[in-house]
Amino acid sequence: MSKPKNSFNMLATGLVVRELRTRFNMRLHDLAPLMSITPSSLSRIENGERKLFLDEAFLLSQVTGVPLQAMVEKIRELETKPELAEFLTARDKLAVAKANLT
Image 1 (cartoon, rainbow, N blue to C red):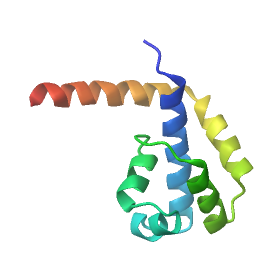
Image 2 (image 1 turned 180 degrees about the horizontal axis):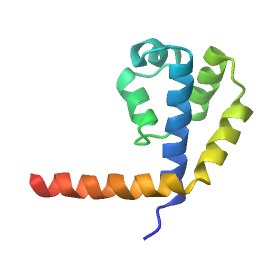
Image 3 (image 1 turned 45 degrees about the horizontal axis):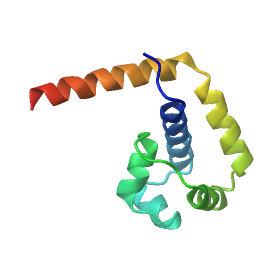
Image 4 (image 1 turned 90 degrees about the horizontal axis):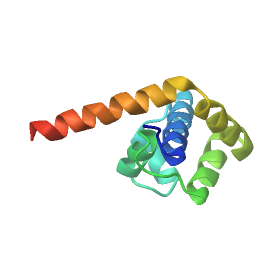
C-alpha cells in the first residue's frame, strides 16, 4: 500500500521545521508564538500531523533567516528518501497496534 503524497510532504515538512527550531536552540514554546501558532500546533507540524500554512512558513523564514525556497528544496529532497516511506509504514502499524489495545 503506497502512502499519499500529502503524508510524505507533511512528514518532510515537519522534519525541516524541527531541524530549524533545534538549529536555533529554540523550544516549542519559544518558536510557536513567533509563528502565530500554539506550541501544540507546532508540535503537530513537526510530527507530520498538521500542515504548515504559507503564512506560518513565511514567519518561520523571517525568524530563522532561512529563505522559503531553501526550506522547500530541503522538503523536496527529504520526500525522495525511501526511509520516509519506511517510517510512515512503521508509524501506521504502531497506531493500529495502539488502537487494538483500547
